[in-house]
Image 1 (cartoon, rainbow, N blue to C red):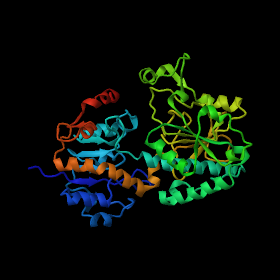
Image 2 (image 1 turned 180 degrees about the vertical axis):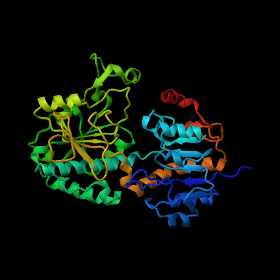
Image 3 (image 1 turned 45 degrees about the vertical axis):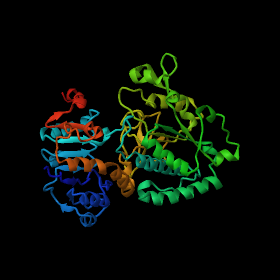
Image 4 (image 1 turned 90 degrees about the vertical axis):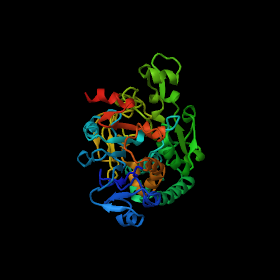
Length: 437
């Protein structure tokens, strides 16, 4: 009879803001009661104390002793990888990311079974393990915070001027109270005439987008169609006391280069036949939030050239802040030249000079591009994440083998997420071999 694998909870040490954990003490207790031993790497940063894990039945270690099923969030340092073990992490290797090429090589050399959360998906391709909701929630709060500070520096009164960033709140419970106060300000005083009608555009429909929209719903946002935005007038009091939310559909943000109708199936097969249609929408927005997927096959939605042209030719151009929650450097939002941090959440991009500044009072568009947003609500995001991953951890540990791909008693959603095993790329990730050459 096989012994159960020993679960090891990795420390998260990517930066000073990373306090999340892959499994909470409550989840550890659940595993231990089911005869799954757990080791926890001691960490002074983790949102839960070592003593809480110890009381839950885990063994606290400075170096893993028996753990062979290592559970983490961010990619682990290559020099800490344990030979012939199983790792469950967001590896950020499967899109051919050059910055993690050495990590993928290390997984192969050390004959590690790598299970990437990104590829644990349902029958419709939806991700089953993610931090998307809290990325959206924190990202939307931070975007509104940046707008409030920028407008305040420009002398424009606004209901977001006192809204703190997500990390300053530390929890969604605290942030919701502040959002309630902000909603009261919107209902009572509304927006200054210089920023009405107040319109926020959103790109993307997944978990991150839904989290961002959750915040706007808390503020009483009203849905609006793109064709109706230009008909809004600043003269109506009702418009001054409303946030308008514009969720772009594919056919609204993209168009065929040759003037044909938009067909999603054609777009997936031939993305080169399409281009952005966002130039007609951007001047009417105060904020745009990007929560969409992008890779190099697809057209950029907001380019430097587009913004420069609009900035110079459209006197009605109102776009003040871009919240790039996807954080693809020079991706669908080309002016996302770098990521930002919780301590400095935004930079200013001048579309005319194409220069970047850290001073929010400078002329240009503010770009919020924090790349670890869920860290700002570490406890709540950890609880939600652990609830998604715990059963998968149990199933792997209980079967007691590291040969995950070939163990057909395990569900397909786990086996299909295996990237490397026995020193080789699995069949569905063979394409990474070409990227490494």
